[in-house]
Image (cartoon, rainbow, N blue to C red; front, side, top):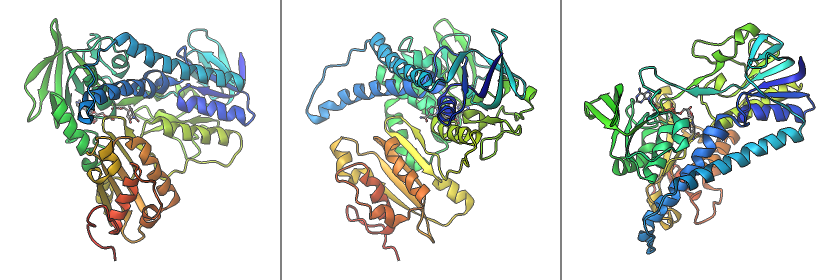
Length: 468
Ligand code: NAD
């Protein structure tokens, strides 16, 4: 039997962070991972490989539009093996780095599938080895949601992991789900040459974000892709020799169509039900989430949970922060998950990012707010890089002027949004943002300009109105 002070189950961004922080604070730590390489979905089959492929897509797209700049490249020749090799090498570098960091911290890494047998023990599925722990962090993440009605047994029906393998470039590809994964993968396959159709159940793509913030991306998708069907449901999918026949239900969609490949990206399901948590007395809700308090403690005193398995948003950066809290509480520090905002980013082209409250949330809650919207068509930097379609929107409390939320669509929106997250955490008001000197010409100026639009002090455009 292996004995450890702290056991962490799952080595995604949440799991390895919890393990490393606990080790740094002096604990003897064991980290269990079922897959051969560390890093979880994010590093192996999620955030990182997709970002590598999105960069490839960006290079292809930039070269296509270079003629607008007076430079002409010949049509790109795509060497799929080379694209995959580059992606895989980045993943290997990062997962290898995690492995090295674990070793340097003397974290005991075990490859296996752990299930609880009591509130102080897990057993490894293959070896039957028992690991006894004082405290445990469950960081088992989530899995792709698979509707049984879709024939995933046919390799032409893909989930995001399959799509990242890049087995081939289908001629006609259907993406079911206009959320973050669907749209990022559509960006990649479109650049590589597939004809894309997107089908989204809701009335807009990326339903969680404000419609005006998503609008530049939507316009581009409508222009570049074969079709984007909103308010549309896939009612059936059948496998034919010539492709996947899909039936739709929706005002604008055809009754059916046949595609070479289909990507299903309709969300992720938490893995709380897959570790026999009940044997430790840990409560898992009907959806598979494990509830925790602000110290990331479950209903069982010595067992913590973090990341996708504790709830939405299922984002790596949320998991990392929760992980540090769990490890610090385990090590006796006064720590709690107490954040005002968790930013969201779709790394599409253009990118979409939002943080704090969205305008639709403020409307639903009846909050008295003001907004400043700055169209990037008036940004010198945006025009210089040939991308004028962006928009930055800042939302402020009418009475206090404090920033409540921000949405950005445009090049590097995912990087730009951090300023607004910091502003929200620091309780900044419009003037703090507007009067902070942003370097010119930068895309970051658009955040200050959005605040100036709300204040009525903008001079790069006509001010919408003077603030009293
Ligand atoms: P999602 O929830 O973001 O989007 C799923 C979309 O599918 C929604 O728009 C939904 O309305 C739609 N949908 C649901 N059922 C449908 C149906 N039957 N037909 C058509 N459309 C349907 O989920 P996702 O894109 O699969 O992403 C999963 C998770 O991974 C999310 O929590 C996301 O935040 C996270 N993720 C984040 C990033 C990032 O941070 N850049 C990238 C990838 C994934």
